Length: 114
Length: 113
Image (tube, rainbow over all chains, first blue to last red; front, side, top):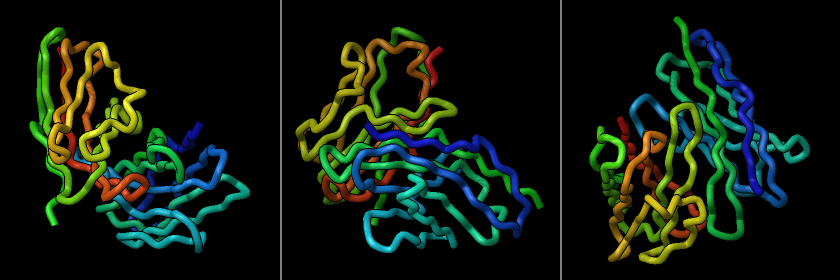
């Protein structure tokens, strides 16, 4: 069965600083991997996804993520954080087979200070 | 392109009452999902439809929750009777087909008193 661990519940960074949000997954085969962002009172917006191919994936809003199979990780990065990036970030893993259920982590809340 | 639409956005009910949520997926999307997101947790899949058939409802508490997608387009999720622990955000998502990217609606925030 799939599972996702986001070890950081809350992260605070200064505006302009770099950001890395951690995600570790457990899955027996090659997974789909996603990062979604959720602003207060909003639904989830897809930032980026990894299906296959290049392990460094570029997304919207200047985000990128790197798939490392040996570490079962899919960490999200941004070189310079903007105040508007403050939100909740969810990592999710899906399967290539079966019903495509997505399993979400518990999320990381990002606070950006001036 | 219009996104996933959900209504109502907010609902407050008392325990043992019933409630229904509506979802209209992105046009042409065959697969529709309902998720439950409890405060402080990630979304958890309740049920998945492919057109008007159920693909997976293994996590749906069938003694109180029901869902339908009769014409393979919009969908309704119902809770009857509601319990305090059903307080959550109910998210609807759709994808073009199974194993395609899922796009989420804004959610319905339910508070059961």
